[in-house]
Amino acid sequence: MLLQNEFPLLKSYNLPSYNISYPKNGNYLIGSLFLQVPAIILTIFKEKKALAKIIEKEQIDGLISDNRFGIYHAKIPSVYITHQLRVLSGFTTFFTTKIHQKIYEKFNEIWVPDIYGKSNFSGELSSTKLPKEQLKFIGVLSRFKLQKLPLKYNILVVLSGIEPQRTLLENKLLNELKHFNGKVLFIRGVFSEKKITASSNIVVKNHLLSHELEKAINESDLVIARSGYSTIMDMAVLGKKTFFIPTTGQKEQEYLAELMDFKKISPYSKQEDFNLNELKKVKKLHGFQPLKTTIHLELFQLFSSK
Image (cartoon, rainbow, N blue to C red; front, top):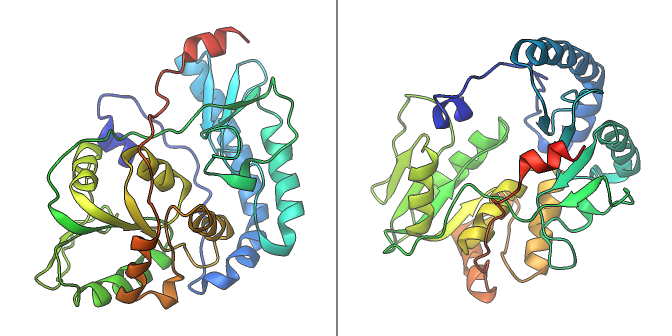
């Protein structure tokens, strides 16, 4: 729905859904995902079958998969985009990483949206022994551009991610921020016509299109968001002060939040521990420094070289 709204003139196909369900208690997330592995494998076969029909119908010359396991073809150059070459899952990290490796090794190339070296944003998530000819660090990617606009909001909240954790954080933040002495723009991150009530200092929006969200971020002094990797790249490009609240039980987000704090970029809090006093930590860290996004990839040359 997001892509169809952003690119209404482009043709789109619906691929089979993994239909992954998430427990209310985030601490049970890893165990729940393991139980759903057979259904995920079945979906991979279904999406490969659907892909074959699309390739034949549209005469596709190249494929770019954004973490879709079955979107590759033996006779067509296929690229897999991921920053998570190591899949953190607690004591099962070795096994989840090996499973993921078996998946992405089938692709011609793996593109990591990050800077190569110690100044990167993905840390040990992108650590791998893949051959250099298969692995490419393509730089920080973001759909946004830095704009020098007058500040309109003291805090911007951008919610996203899985349910029920998204709703749990929404309720937590609305309750805390009603005591905040400043203006808040609250983006719920849902495709819905339903409106919710909030205190007078909070402006609530269900969803914003890219250009609207870009403007809102540039107009805000501080951004509160999940520590998802795409969000981190967006904040790096826009050079924002941020406060991260990782999704409970998502090891990747928890690791990234800790990494940004370790690098003195952004503080974080566990969802259950958040309160307004936590935001005082922001002043002690230097925030993101604006970076240029990598938007000049010569896709045709990359594909044709194969």
